[in-house]
Amino acid sequence: MTMRIVTGAGSGLGRALARAMVAEGHKVVLMGRQADKLSALAEELGDAVLPIAVDLSQAEAVRQAFDFAEAWGGAPGWVVHCAGVGQFGPLESLSDEAIASMLNNNLLSTILVAREVVRRWSEREGVLANVLSTAAQVGKAEETVYCASKWGMKGFLESLRLELKGAPMRLVNLYPAGINSEFWAQSDHVDPSGFMAPEEVAQYILNALSAKPSCYVTELSIGRY
Figure 1: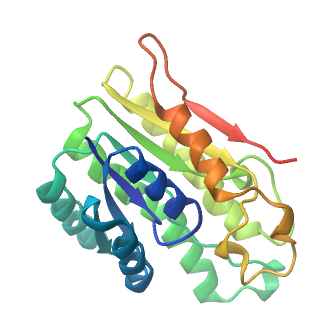
Figure 2 (figure 1 turned 30 degrees about the vertical axis):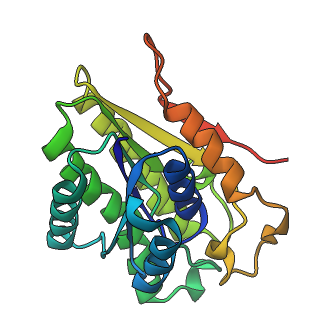
C-alpha cells in the first residue's frame, strides 16, 4: 500500500480518483476547500484516507497541509492536483472577485503545490500529475479568464518539466474534455449532461499514471463522444 495525495478531492474527478485509489488498496490524503465534502467522503472511505481542508492558493497553508500529509503517510507515490474553479460568461460580466478566484485557485495553486512537491520529493521516484482540461489547448468563448488560467498552468508545467529533466520524478499533464460534475453548476453556457462520467475519466488517468519499465505517459488528452 502506498500513499497518494489528491487535491480537489471533495467533488467531481478528484472524488472519483480518491475512491478508485482506495479501492485499489492505497492510502489517500484528500485535500480541498470544502471541509464538509471532504468529511463526507472520509466517512465513506474510512481509515484509508486523511481529509485536509486547505486553501491551496495560500503558501503557508500549502506547507502545513503537506506537513500533515507526510506525517500521516510518508512520501506519496503520486500527487494528483485536480483542484480548480471556473466562473463563466462574457469578459465584461466577470467581477474582480471572479477573476482573482480563477487565477488564484487554478494557476497560483498549481505553482504552490508543485513547488512543495518538488522541494520535498523531486529526488524520489513518483508522479506529479496536474489536471488542466482542454481549456489549456484551445480558446473558448465565455471562458476567457478560465482559459487564461489553464494556459498559464500549461506554460508553467512545461517549463517545470525542463527543470526536472533527469530527475526521477515524473511530471504528467492531463487534458480531459468536459466532465459531468458539480463544476458546471453555476454555468448556463454549456449543457454538461452529455459530458464524460468522472469515474470513467478517473480510470483512464489511473491506467495512464502507471509507468512501464522503459517509458511513461507525459501528456494525456481524454476526449468525449
